[in-house]
Image (cartoon, rainbow over the protein chains, first blue to last red):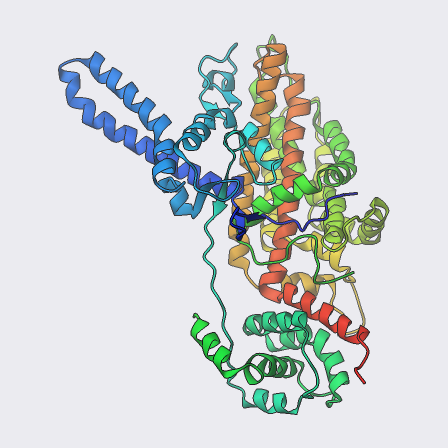
Length: 282
Length: 304
């Protein structure tokens, strides 16, 4: 039914001209929506403060006050996103709070022209817009102010990088700022782990994929109940018990922990072990 | 089948990531998702039309009739029906996605066979216990020539909707359990996990988070519905210079289209939330990796 064989995920791999590979997590429409709403609130608040500041001018000339109000609204609305994205490394305050950033599609920071253009096209992405008159069943809309945003949503949905029209035109995308933790070598309080590791056959070499699976299991096992641990571990532990000729009543969980211990702790060189211990965070 | 080489990347995700991945899933599997969803939803769309088409009265000349009231009555009935029927209508999509997680090209035949196998369980649990059929039958009993029956249409239907909503907030992944895990309803063997037991075990792990995810998805669903509905209103206005919501197109095309499209999106999000639930609380991704390694170990001959 489907011809696409790549794994379905919201990540994208980018190789820079310097041949450095990065993997970015792309921010989709629903991650970007709260950032947009936050920025909208900030723009409203800024406009509100401006109107309060202009209030004393009403005494001298209401015309000038109104004109300045409209001018302020224009500047806040059109230049807010452009200024922040160009001068603050692709982040408006809303994007910063939501942990997202605008980059070019080759992973570089955006320039002022791209920031200006993608913010200019924001209104195209918010189309079609409706008027209050339309919602109360008047004959013709008189002022289109309510955005439906379907153009932007459809553009995002059909773009591999979740690009709205503004992003497609400027060659930009919005990525999630990753905060990853490195998990170092885990230690075991149960002394039986080291004892069982001693008994395991020395000639059994743990393949790389199995080492990764063992590391994933040991990292996650603390979240499982003891019966669930045995249930999960059984898939690998049962053939291992058979291979090693160990008694059938050996705990599956303990066996995988012992194999992990032998692979990452007992068999790893002292130097790399020290480095690994330094890497342990939380 | 390689258990550690899944089509959908298996890792923990938060609620917003799940919603974004639902968009990706829809893009990647657009044609099968739309086709299978239409197969599931078409009978309900036709049935709902027959149940509700008479409700809105668009005759503006009749001064005694509250036109807007009749339209609201129709919208309420349609929304209620789609809300209650959506999980049942999305059965084919759920089955397809379950297979697509491991298989790059599941066939329609396999998907249909899966749903047929789970058919009786789905009809009982989603159709009867979760009120999809009783509510439809209750609407059928309405007197079409008589006045608006507030007790029946608002109080009783509203209560049914509330009961279904509460059940679904607490136990959202029942369709996935029935279709994908294929547990039996009854068993005499104590070690065999039944649908009821599995349903209880899977959902007892994080009820608080389930409520938050349901609320987020509902909000997105409402936004999506509004977005589609008002875009269709805009298109009607642009093409026919008709800016009213009380038109044949808006009532009989736009409202069902917006409701069922939102239902499709929610089904995709629910499936991904189900995967996330299994990853987060049952270590499903670890289980898949260990299962794959176990199989490789069995297939590898002993070194002499």
